[in-house]
Amino acid sequence: MVLTKKRVTLIFFIILLLAILIRCGAMINRSFWYDEAFSILISEKGPQAILAGTLTKDEPSVTADIHPPTYYFLLDGWMRLVGTSILAARLLSLLLGLGILVNLYLLTKELLGEPSALLACLLAAVFPFQVQFATEIRMYALLTFFLTLATFAFIKGMRSRSWRWWLLFALSAALAQYTQNLAAFYLVSLALTGIIKWDRKLIKQTLFAGLGAVLLYLPWLIHLPAQFAKIQHHYWIERPSVVVLINLLLRFTTNLPLPDPWMLPALLIAFLTTAMGLLLTFRMLRQKSDGYPIGLWLAWMSFAPPLFLWLLSQWTPVYVDRALLASQAVFCIWLAWVIKKTSMPKVIQWATAVLLTAGIGMGLNQLATNNGFGYDPLKKINEVLSTEMQPDDVVVHSNKLTYLPLFYYDPEMPMSFIGDEPGGSTDTLSKATRKILGVNDAPDVESAVSSAQRIWFVIYEESVKEYVEAGYSTHAHLSYLDEHFKQNSFTSYGNVQLYLFEHR
Image (tube, rainbow, N blue to C red; front, side, top):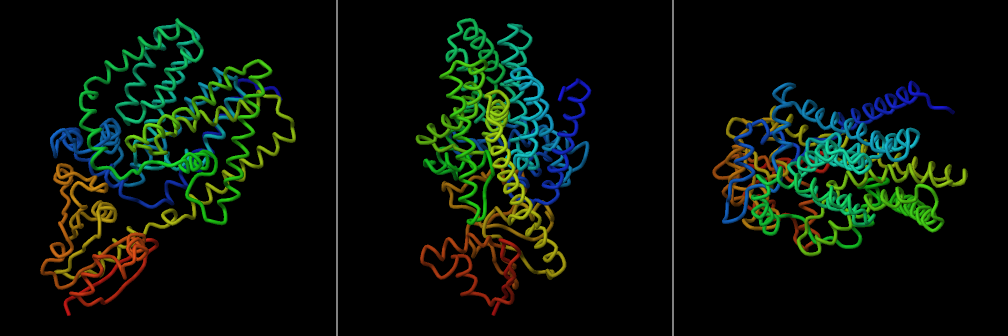
Protein backbone atom coordinates (compact mmCIF):
# COMPACT_ATOMS: atom_id res chain seq x y z
CA MET A 1 0.00 0.00 0.00
CA VAL A 2 1.39 3.37 -1.05
CA LEU A 3 1.32 5.88 1.78
CA THR A 4 0.50 9.25 0.30
CA LYS A 5 0.96 12.36 2.43
CA LYS A 6 -2.80 12.65 2.90
CA ARG A 7 -3.07 8.99 3.96
CA VAL A 8 -0.16 9.32 6.42
CA THR A 9 -1.82 12.37 7.97
CA LEU A 10 -5.12 10.52 8.27
CA ILE A 11 -3.51 7.45 9.89
CA PHE A 12 -1.56 9.62 12.30
CA PHE A 13 -4.69 11.46 13.42
CA ILE A 14 -6.48 8.13 13.88
CA ILE A 15 -3.60 7.02 16.13
CA LEU A 16 -3.89 10.27 18.09
CA LEU A 17 -7.64 9.72 18.43
CA LEU A 18 -7.04 6.16 19.67
CA ALA A 19 -4.51 7.49 22.18
CA ILE A 20 -7.00 10.09 23.41
CA LEU A 21 -9.78 7.52 23.84
CA ILE A 22 -7.57 5.09 25.79
CA ARG A 23 -6.12 7.84 27.95
CA CYS A 24 -9.50 9.41 28.65
CA GLY A 25 -10.79 6.05 29.85
CA ALA A 26 -7.79 5.61 32.15
CA MET A 27 -7.96 9.24 33.30
CA ILE A 28 -11.60 8.94 34.35
CA ASN A 29 -11.33 5.48 35.91
CA ARG A 30 -8.17 5.69 37.97
CA SER A 31 -8.24 6.58 41.64
CA PHE A 32 -6.77 9.75 43.10
CA TRP A 33 -3.68 9.17 45.24
CA TYR A 34 -1.10 10.85 47.44
CA ASP A 35 1.37 12.06 44.81
CA GLU A 36 -1.38 13.56 42.67
CA ALA A 37 -2.88 15.31 45.68
CA PHE A 38 0.54 16.72 46.54
CA SER A 39 1.00 18.02 42.98
CA ILE A 40 -2.28 19.93 43.02
CA LEU A 41 -1.95 21.23 46.57
CA ILE A 42 1.60 22.55 46.17
CA SER A 43 1.00 23.94 42.66
CA GLU A 44 -2.13 25.90 43.55
CA LYS A 45 -0.14 27.79 46.21
CA GLY A 46 1.72 29.65 43.47
CA PRO A 47 5.37 30.02 42.35
CA GLN A 48 6.68 31.52 45.60
CA ALA A 49 5.27 28.68 47.70
CA ILE A 50 6.49 26.10 45.17
CA LEU A 51 10.06 27.39 45.49
CA ALA A 52 9.79 27.57 49.27
CA GLY A 53 8.47 24.02 49.44
CA THR A 54 11.26 22.83 47.18
CA LEU A 55 14.27 24.77 48.45
CA THR A 56 13.67 25.50 52.15
CA LYS A 57 16.23 23.63 54.26
CA ASP A 58 14.85 21.65 57.18
CA GLU A 59 18.31 20.48 58.15
CA PRO A 60 21.78 21.72 57.21
CA SER A 61 22.35 20.94 53.51
CA VAL A 62 19.01 19.11 53.10
CA THR A 63 16.21 20.64 51.03
CA ALA A 64 12.51 20.13 51.66
CA ASP A 65 11.71 18.33 48.39
CA ILE A 66 13.68 16.32 45.82
CA HIS A 67 11.97 17.48 42.61
CA PRO A 68 12.71 20.60 40.55
CA PRO A 69 9.78 23.03 40.17
CA THR A 70 9.07 23.18 36.41
CA TYR A 71 6.08 20.81 36.41
CA TYR A 72 4.55 22.50 39.45
CA PHE A 73 4.92 25.92 37.77
CA LEU A 74 3.27 24.61 34.61
CA LEU A 75 0.47 22.93 36.57
CA ASP A 76 -0.15 26.15 38.50
CA GLY A 77 -0.57 28.11 35.26
CA TRP A 78 -2.72 25.35 33.76
CA MET A 79 -5.06 25.22 36.76
CA ARG A 80 -5.49 28.98 36.67
CA LEU A 81 -6.96 28.46 33.18
CA VAL A 82 -9.03 25.28 33.62
CA GLY A 83 -9.56 24.88 37.36
CA THR A 84 -8.24 22.61 40.11
CA SER A 85 -10.46 19.57 39.58
CA ILE A 86 -8.75 16.20 39.27
CA LEU A 87 -9.80 15.72 35.65
CA ALA A 88 -8.71 19.25 34.72
CA ALA A 89 -5.27 18.65 36.23
CA ARG A 90 -4.94 15.25 34.55
CA LEU A 91 -5.81 16.78 31.20
CA LEU A 92 -2.42 18.53 31.20
CA SER A 93 -0.62 15.17 31.31
CA LEU A 94 -2.88 13.83 28.57
CA LEU A 95 -1.95 16.74 26.28
CA LEU A 96 1.73 16.23 27.08
CA GLY A 97 1.27 12.55 26.19
CA LEU A 98 -0.01 13.57 22.77
CA GLY A 99 3.02 15.86 22.44
CA ILE A 100 5.23 12.82 23.12
CA LEU A 101 3.57 11.02 20.22
CA VAL A 102 4.24 13.98 17.92
CA ASN A 103 7.91 14.05 18.99
CA LEU A 104 8.11 10.30 18.50
CA TYR A 105 6.62 10.52 15.01
CA LEU A 106 9.07 13.24 13.95
CA LEU A 107 12.04 11.36 15.41
CA THR A 108 11.12 8.02 13.86
CA LYS A 109 10.32 9.61 10.50
CA GLU A 110 13.77 11.19 10.50
CA LEU A 111 15.44 7.87 11.33
CA LEU A 112 13.31 5.24 9.60
CA GLY A 113 10.67 6.85 7.40
CA GLU A 114 6.92 7.33 7.66
CA PRO A 115 5.66 3.70 7.82
CA SER A 116 7.92 2.94 10.77
CA ALA A 117 6.99 6.28 12.37
CA LEU A 118 3.31 5.36 12.27
CA LEU A 119 4.01 1.93 13.79
CA ALA A 120 6.16 3.40 16.58
CA CYS A 121 3.46 5.95 17.39
CA LEU A 122 0.79 3.26 17.42
CA LEU A 123 2.82 1.23 19.92
CA ALA A 124 3.43 4.26 22.15
CA ALA A 125 -0.26 5.19 21.92
CA VAL A 126 -1.40 1.86 23.36
CA PHE A 127 1.45 0.60 25.57
CA PRO A 128 0.06 0.65 29.15
CA PHE A 129 3.25 2.14 30.62
CA GLN A 130 2.82 5.26 28.48
CA VAL A 131 -0.95 5.38 29.07
CA GLN A 132 -0.57 5.20 32.85
CA PHE A 133 1.73 8.19 33.20
CA ALA A 134 -0.02 10.27 30.55
CA THR A 135 -3.05 10.25 32.88
CA GLU A 136 -1.32 11.06 36.18
CA ILE A 137 -0.87 14.44 37.82
CA ARG A 138 2.90 14.15 38.04
CA MET A 139 5.92 15.38 36.10
CA TYR A 140 6.77 12.23 34.15
CA ALA A 141 4.81 13.03 30.97
CA LEU A 142 6.47 16.46 30.87
CA LEU A 143 9.88 14.84 31.44
CA THR A 144 9.30 12.43 28.55
CA PHE A 145 8.11 15.24 26.30
CA PHE A 146 11.33 17.22 26.83
CA LEU A 147 13.58 14.15 26.49
CA THR A 148 11.99 12.99 23.24
CA LEU A 149 12.20 16.57 21.93
CA ALA A 150 15.88 16.67 22.93
CA THR A 151 16.47 13.37 21.11
CA PHE A 152 14.83 14.67 17.92
CA ALA A 153 16.88 17.88 18.09
CA PHE A 154 20.05 15.82 18.67
CA ILE A 155 19.44 13.68 15.58
CA LYS A 156 18.60 16.71 13.45
CA GLY A 157 21.67 18.55 14.73
CA MET A 158 23.89 15.51 14.07
CA ARG A 159 22.63 15.20 10.51
CA SER A 160 22.29 18.85 9.51
CA ARG A 161 25.12 20.27 11.67
CA SER A 162 22.85 23.31 12.14
CA TRP A 163 23.39 25.30 15.32
CA ARG A 164 19.60 25.93 15.57
CA TRP A 165 18.98 22.25 16.32
CA TRP A 166 21.78 22.18 18.87
CA LEU A 167 20.26 25.21 20.54
CA LEU A 168 16.93 23.38 20.74
CA PHE A 169 18.75 20.35 22.14
CA ALA A 170 20.41 22.45 24.85
CA LEU A 171 17.12 24.12 25.77
CA SER A 172 15.05 20.93 25.90
CA ALA A 173 17.79 19.05 27.79
CA ALA A 174 17.93 21.83 30.40
CA LEU A 175 14.14 21.85 30.71
CA ALA A 176 14.16 18.07 31.19
CA GLN A 177 16.62 18.51 34.06
CA TYR A 178 14.45 21.29 35.52
CA THR A 179 11.57 18.79 35.43
CA GLN A 180 13.19 15.71 37.01
CA ASN A 181 16.77 15.22 38.16
CA LEU A 182 16.87 11.64 36.81
CA ALA A 183 16.74 13.05 33.26
CA ALA A 184 20.54 13.07 33.46
CA PHE A 185 20.75 9.29 32.94
CA TYR A 186 18.94 9.48 29.60
CA LEU A 187 20.84 12.61 28.51
CA VAL A 188 24.24 11.10 29.35
CA SER A 189 23.37 8.02 27.29
CA LEU A 190 22.35 10.30 24.42
CA ALA A 191 25.52 12.39 24.73
CA LEU A 192 27.68 9.25 24.50
CA THR A 193 26.45 8.71 20.92
CA GLY A 194 29.38 10.64 19.47
CA ILE A 195 31.89 8.55 21.42
CA ILE A 196 30.21 5.29 20.38
CA LYS A 197 30.28 6.41 16.73
CA TRP A 198 33.71 8.00 17.28
CA ASP A 199 32.62 11.06 15.35
CA ARG A 200 34.96 13.86 16.46
CA LYS A 201 32.76 16.59 15.05
CA LEU A 202 29.69 15.15 16.76
CA ILE A 203 31.62 14.87 20.03
CA LYS A 204 32.61 18.52 19.78
CA GLN A 205 29.06 19.66 18.96
CA THR A 206 27.63 17.56 21.78
CA LEU A 207 30.11 19.05 24.24
CA PHE A 208 29.24 22.63 23.26
CA ALA A 209 25.49 21.95 23.30
CA GLY A 210 25.85 20.08 26.60
CA LEU A 211 27.74 23.01 28.07
CA GLY A 212 24.88 25.27 26.98
CA ALA A 213 22.40 22.97 28.72
CA VAL A 214 24.50 23.00 31.90
CA LEU A 215 24.70 26.81 31.85
CA LEU A 216 20.92 27.02 31.48
CA TYR A 217 20.55 24.54 34.34
CA LEU A 218 23.14 26.24 36.55
CA PRO A 219 20.64 28.26 38.68
CA TRP A 220 19.17 24.96 39.85
CA LEU A 221 22.37 22.91 39.70
CA ILE A 222 23.72 24.72 42.78
CA HIS A 223 20.81 23.27 44.78
CA LEU A 224 21.43 19.70 43.60
CA PRO A 225 23.80 18.69 46.45
CA ALA A 226 21.16 19.61 49.03
CA GLN A 227 18.51 17.64 47.13
CA PHE A 228 20.90 14.71 46.83
CA ALA A 229 21.39 14.83 50.60
CA LYS A 230 17.61 14.64 50.98
CA ILE A 231 17.59 11.47 48.88
CA GLN A 232 20.38 9.92 50.93
CA HIS A 233 18.76 10.64 54.29
CA HIS A 234 15.00 10.62 53.72
CA TYR A 235 13.97 8.53 50.75
CA TRP A 236 11.83 5.43 50.56
CA ILE A 237 13.58 3.71 47.65
CA GLU A 238 15.60 0.59 48.44
CA ARG A 239 18.69 -0.65 46.63
CA PRO A 240 17.38 -2.39 43.48
CA SER A 241 18.14 -6.04 42.79
CA VAL A 242 18.42 -7.77 39.41
CA VAL A 243 14.69 -8.50 39.67
CA VAL A 244 14.08 -4.78 39.08
CA LEU A 245 15.56 -5.09 35.58
CA ILE A 246 13.24 -8.02 34.84
CA ASN A 247 10.33 -5.94 36.11
CA LEU A 248 11.40 -3.18 33.74
CA LEU A 249 10.92 -5.49 30.75
CA LEU A 250 7.43 -6.20 32.07
CA ARG A 251 6.83 -2.45 32.43
CA PHE A 252 7.96 -1.88 28.84
CA THR A 253 5.68 -4.59 27.40
CA THR A 254 2.75 -5.45 29.69
CA ASN A 255 3.12 -3.04 32.63
CA LEU A 256 2.83 -3.86 36.35
CA PRO A 257 1.23 -4.88 38.66
CA LEU A 258 -0.40 -8.00 37.22
CA PRO A 259 -2.42 -10.80 38.86
CA ASP A 260 -0.31 -13.81 39.85
CA PRO A 261 -1.82 -16.13 37.18
CA TRP A 262 -0.80 -13.63 34.50
CA MET A 263 2.84 -13.30 35.55
CA LEU A 264 4.21 -16.31 33.67
CA PRO A 265 2.51 -15.37 30.34
CA ALA A 266 3.64 -11.77 30.84
CA LEU A 267 7.23 -12.86 31.46
CA LEU A 268 7.16 -15.02 28.32
CA ILE A 269 5.84 -12.09 26.28
CA ALA A 270 8.47 -9.72 27.68
CA PHE A 271 11.41 -12.09 27.24
CA LEU A 272 10.40 -13.44 23.83
CA THR A 273 9.75 -9.98 22.40
CA THR A 274 12.98 -8.52 23.76
CA ALA A 275 15.13 -11.55 22.95
CA MET A 276 13.81 -11.70 19.39
CA GLY A 277 14.51 -8.00 18.91
CA LEU A 278 18.06 -8.34 20.24
CA LEU A 279 18.77 -11.41 18.11
CA LEU A 280 17.61 -9.66 14.95
CA THR A 281 19.57 -6.53 15.89
CA PHE A 282 22.83 -8.48 16.32
CA ARG A 283 22.10 -10.45 13.19
CA MET A 284 21.91 -7.16 11.28
CA LEU A 285 25.19 -6.13 12.91
CA ARG A 286 26.93 -9.37 12.00
CA GLN A 287 25.77 -9.15 8.39
CA LYS A 288 26.51 -5.40 8.21
CA SER A 289 23.04 -4.91 6.71
CA ASP A 290 21.75 -1.48 5.75
CA GLY A 291 20.54 0.50 8.74
CA TYR A 292 22.09 -1.66 11.43
CA PRO A 293 23.77 1.32 13.22
CA ILE A 294 20.32 2.87 13.75
CA GLY A 295 19.02 -0.36 15.27
CA LEU A 296 22.00 -0.62 17.60
CA TRP A 297 21.60 3.00 18.66
CA LEU A 298 17.88 2.53 19.34
CA ALA A 299 18.65 -0.54 21.47
CA TRP A 300 21.31 1.50 23.29
CA MET A 301 18.87 4.32 24.10
CA SER A 302 16.24 1.78 25.20
CA PHE A 303 18.41 -0.10 27.67
CA ALA A 304 21.47 2.02 28.59
CA PRO A 305 19.62 4.65 30.71
CA PRO A 306 17.89 1.99 32.87
CA LEU A 307 21.20 0.16 33.30
CA PHE A 308 23.07 3.34 34.32
CA LEU A 309 20.29 4.25 36.76
CA TRP A 310 20.35 0.73 38.22
CA LEU A 311 24.14 0.79 38.62
CA LEU A 312 24.17 4.15 40.41
CA SER A 313 21.35 2.92 42.64
CA GLN A 314 23.67 0.24 44.02
CA TRP A 315 25.46 3.16 45.68
CA THR A 316 22.60 5.62 46.32
CA PRO A 317 19.14 4.14 45.62
CA VAL A 318 17.32 6.47 43.22
CA TYR A 319 15.86 3.90 40.83
CA VAL A 320 12.32 4.92 39.78
CA ASP A 321 11.05 3.11 36.70
CA ARG A 322 8.58 5.85 35.73
CA ALA A 323 11.55 8.14 35.12
CA LEU A 324 12.42 5.78 32.23
CA LEU A 325 9.38 6.57 30.08
CA ALA A 326 11.58 8.18 27.43
CA SER A 327 13.57 4.95 27.15
CA GLN A 328 10.32 3.04 26.71
CA ALA A 329 9.31 5.50 23.97
CA VAL A 330 12.58 4.73 22.15
CA PHE A 331 11.86 1.05 22.82
CA CYS A 332 8.72 1.54 20.69
CA ILE A 333 10.88 2.93 17.86
CA TRP A 334 13.30 0.02 18.24
CA LEU A 335 10.42 -2.47 17.95
CA ALA A 336 9.21 -0.65 14.83
CA TRP A 337 12.74 -0.92 13.39
CA VAL A 338 12.91 -4.64 14.24
CA ILE A 339 9.56 -5.31 12.58
CA LYS A 340 9.94 -3.05 9.53
CA LYS A 341 13.68 -2.98 8.80
CA THR A 342 15.16 -6.39 9.62
CA SER A 343 13.52 -8.54 6.93
CA MET A 344 11.67 -10.40 9.63
CA PRO A 345 9.84 -13.44 8.22
CA LYS A 346 6.09 -12.98 7.98
CA VAL A 347 5.38 -15.76 10.46
CA ILE A 348 7.60 -14.07 13.07
CA GLN A 349 5.98 -10.71 12.29
CA TRP A 350 2.57 -12.17 13.02
CA ALA A 351 3.85 -13.94 16.13
CA THR A 352 5.33 -10.65 17.36
CA ALA A 353 2.06 -8.85 16.67
CA VAL A 354 0.15 -11.49 18.65
CA LEU A 355 2.60 -11.30 21.58
CA LEU A 356 2.52 -7.51 21.70
CA THR A 357 -1.26 -7.41 21.40
CA ALA A 358 -1.61 -9.91 24.25
CA GLY A 359 0.81 -7.97 26.45
CA ILE A 360 -0.84 -4.64 25.73
CA GLY A 361 -4.27 -6.15 26.35
CA MET A 362 -3.16 -7.55 29.71
CA GLY A 363 -1.73 -4.22 30.79
CA LEU A 364 -4.69 -2.12 29.67
CA ASN A 365 -7.11 -4.53 31.32
CA GLN A 366 -5.15 -4.22 34.55
CA LEU A 367 -5.26 -0.43 34.35
CA ALA A 368 -9.04 -0.67 34.05
CA THR A 369 -9.66 -3.27 36.76
CA ASN A 370 -6.73 -3.18 39.19
CA ASN A 371 -7.42 -2.04 42.73
CA GLY A 372 -7.02 1.71 42.49
CA PHE A 373 -8.47 1.93 38.98
CA GLY A 374 -12.17 2.15 38.30
CA TYR A 375 -12.87 2.75 41.99
CA ASP A 376 -11.64 5.52 44.28
CA PRO A 377 -11.80 4.29 47.89
CA LEU A 378 -10.66 7.59 49.39
CA LYS A 379 -13.34 9.53 47.53
CA LYS A 380 -15.93 7.08 48.84
CA ILE A 381 -14.61 7.48 52.39
CA ASN A 382 -14.80 11.25 52.04
CA GLU A 383 -18.46 10.91 51.05
CA VAL A 384 -19.15 8.68 54.06
CA LEU A 385 -17.41 11.02 56.49
CA SER A 386 -19.17 14.07 55.07
CA THR A 387 -22.59 12.54 55.81
CA GLU A 388 -21.94 10.56 59.02
CA MET A 389 -19.53 12.68 61.06
CA GLN A 390 -20.90 14.37 64.18
CA PRO A 391 -19.83 17.88 65.27
CA ASP A 392 -17.12 16.79 67.76
CA ASP A 393 -15.75 13.85 65.73
CA VAL A 394 -12.16 13.78 64.47
CA VAL A 395 -10.59 11.85 61.62
CA VAL A 396 -7.16 10.32 62.20
CA HIS A 397 -5.08 8.86 59.36
CA SER A 398 -2.42 6.28 60.08
CA ASN A 399 -0.13 8.10 57.65
CA LYS A 400 0.02 10.88 55.10
CA LEU A 401 -0.80 8.62 52.14
CA THR A 402 -4.54 8.52 52.91
CA TYR A 403 -4.58 11.97 54.51
CA LEU A 404 -3.48 14.15 51.60
CA PRO A 405 -6.15 13.03 49.06
CA LEU A 406 -8.90 13.55 51.69
CA PHE A 407 -7.38 16.92 52.55
CA TYR A 408 -7.76 17.84 48.87
CA TYR A 409 -11.39 16.66 48.85
CA ASP A 410 -12.29 18.55 52.04
CA PRO A 411 -9.59 20.77 53.63
CA GLU A 412 -12.07 21.95 56.30
CA MET A 413 -12.67 18.46 57.71
CA PRO A 414 -11.23 18.11 61.26
CA MET A 415 -8.52 15.54 60.67
CA SER A 416 -4.82 14.87 61.13
CA PHE A 417 -2.30 12.19 60.26
CA ILE A 418 0.34 10.47 62.35
CA GLY A 419 3.68 11.72 61.11
CA ASP A 420 6.51 9.50 59.93
CA GLU A 421 9.42 8.73 62.19
CA PRO A 422 11.71 11.80 61.93
CA GLY A 423 14.69 11.00 59.74
CA GLY A 424 13.26 7.66 58.63
CA SER A 425 13.12 6.44 55.03
CA THR A 426 9.42 7.37 54.76
CA ASP A 427 9.85 10.86 56.23
CA THR A 428 9.41 12.57 52.84
CA LEU A 429 6.89 15.33 53.64
CA SER A 430 9.13 17.91 55.23
CA LYS A 431 8.20 20.35 57.97
CA ALA A 432 8.53 23.29 55.56
CA THR A 433 6.24 21.66 53.00
CA ARG A 434 3.68 20.69 55.66
CA LYS A 435 3.55 24.32 56.76
CA ILE A 436 3.06 25.58 53.20
CA LEU A 437 0.29 23.06 52.51
CA GLY A 438 -1.41 23.79 55.82
CA VAL A 439 -1.76 20.14 56.82
CA ASN A 440 -2.15 18.80 60.37
CA ASP A 441 0.09 16.06 61.70
CA ALA A 442 0.63 14.50 65.11
CA PRO A 443 3.72 12.77 66.52
CA ASP A 444 1.78 9.70 67.68
CA VAL A 445 -1.70 8.21 67.81
CA GLU A 446 -2.29 9.34 71.40
CA SER A 447 -1.70 12.98 70.47
CA ALA A 448 -3.82 12.59 67.33
CA VAL A 449 -6.95 11.38 69.16
CA SER A 450 -6.49 13.88 72.02
CA SER A 451 -9.77 14.21 73.96
CA ALA A 452 -12.12 13.34 71.08
CA GLN A 453 -15.19 11.30 71.94
CA ARG A 454 -15.43 9.63 68.54
CA ILE A 455 -12.54 8.85 66.21
CA TRP A 456 -12.75 7.86 62.57
CA PHE A 457 -9.54 6.00 61.78
CA VAL A 458 -8.27 5.53 58.21
CA ILE A 459 -5.52 3.06 57.29
CA TYR A 460 -4.34 1.12 54.26
CA GLU A 461 -5.01 -2.61 54.44
CA GLU A 462 -1.40 -3.25 53.39
CA SER A 463 -0.13 -1.39 56.48
CA VAL A 464 -2.08 -3.75 58.74
CA LYS A 465 -0.84 -6.81 56.81
CA GLU A 466 2.78 -5.73 57.26
CA TYR A 467 2.38 -5.74 61.05
CA VAL A 468 0.57 -9.08 61.05
CA GLU A 469 3.27 -10.66 58.85
CA ALA A 470 5.87 -9.33 61.29
CA GLY A 471 4.20 -11.33 64.10
CA TYR A 472 1.96 -8.69 65.69
CA SER A 473 -1.76 -9.19 66.22
CA THR A 474 -2.55 -5.95 64.36
CA HIS A 475 -1.14 -2.52 63.52
CA ALA A 476 0.32 -0.55 66.45
CA HIS A 477 -2.14 2.31 65.96
CA LEU A 478 -5.09 -0.08 66.00
CA SER A 479 -3.72 -1.78 69.13
CA TYR A 480 -3.73 1.54 70.95
CA LEU A 481 -7.24 2.40 69.79
CA ASP A 482 -8.57 -1.05 70.70
CA GLU A 483 -7.07 -0.73 74.17
CA HIS A 484 -8.44 2.74 74.97
CA PHE A 485 -11.62 2.96 72.91
CA LYS A 486 -14.58 0.89 71.84
CA GLN A 487 -14.81 -0.08 68.18
CA ASN A 488 -18.26 0.76 66.82
CA SER A 489 -17.86 -0.08 63.15
CA PHE A 490 -15.43 -1.23 60.51
CA THR A 491 -15.78 -1.00 56.72
CA SER A 492 -13.31 -1.85 53.99
CA TYR A 493 -13.34 0.32 50.85
CA GLY A 494 -11.10 -1.37 48.34
CA ASN A 495 -7.63 -1.37 49.90
CA VAL A 496 -8.50 1.24 52.56
CA GLN A 497 -10.04 0.46 55.96
CA LEU A 498 -12.30 2.85 57.89
CA TYR A 499 -12.88 2.34 61.63
CA LEU A 500 -15.11 4.21 64.05
CA PHE A 501 -14.05 4.27 67.70
CA GLU A 502 -15.61 6.02 70.72
CA HIS A 503 -14.90 6.29 74.44
CA ARG A 504 -16.01 3.27 76.44
